[in-house]
Image (tube, rainbow, N blue to C red; front, side):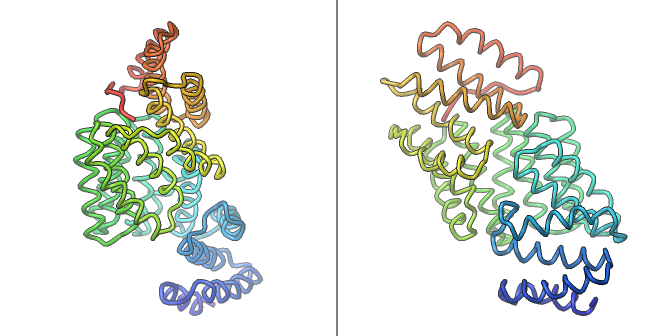
Length: 365
């Protein structure tokens, strides 16, 4: 069985997915019948790799069934590296579901045993993603400690993708704090490293983050080529989430350049709601609200509804920096509409910025 698992692992990238899953299904039945947790865990890990390569995720029944079994099995697996790898993978899934506390706990827990097992790339990626979710929650001091550890592990691993990701997430962390110009330096470096490494998905993320930060600086013309590139790579990589956000960001960029079209956000919003992505829905609604509030004949009821829904969603997932920024933008819109409630909202936003250690910035869609 061990030889068969080794052969299956070696052939994954050279064998059609359906064929690999059929063979791994046979090995899974043998391993489960033997009751060998380590061998079973190895097979589960390979099945998850193949399904991930086929663009499956936790929302897909086949992936979810194996992931749940693998995560339940992880504590009883003697190979600490394998156990930690499966634990970290569940953390990454929870990160995608906007469950920041649980994600950070599981990914952070995985780092040390992965490092001790010599799996430096896996350890680096879990440390880097731990920094990311802590930053999204607003725990910046802890996030910076994790990004330093992740960057060190990435350098020691020599893996160019891990090094690129450490730059991208460092940039995202700085941007979340409000230091967008400094963020852009690191993010652009990460994007270029990803392109040099020919990692298309990492390059996609880099182009999107560069564009996002340029939009926040009011640099729409510079952002559009990066958005178009991320959209092109998103189609190739079947990255539906980034394509969903990309449409909305393109609408925001065009609005900055004078081509205001609130309808440009509709498909993105429909896709975010359909996918159950609270962070995605909140982000699209926030962008749309900012764009529409800039129109001379703004529909203020629609604007306020978008702001309030976005703020509520950010609050639900405890994305405190995004929540604070949304409250700040809402305050500015209330003021523009001549509504006195804007004063209290602005005070609330300012208090949150101070508590989190964030920098205020001009509001751009």
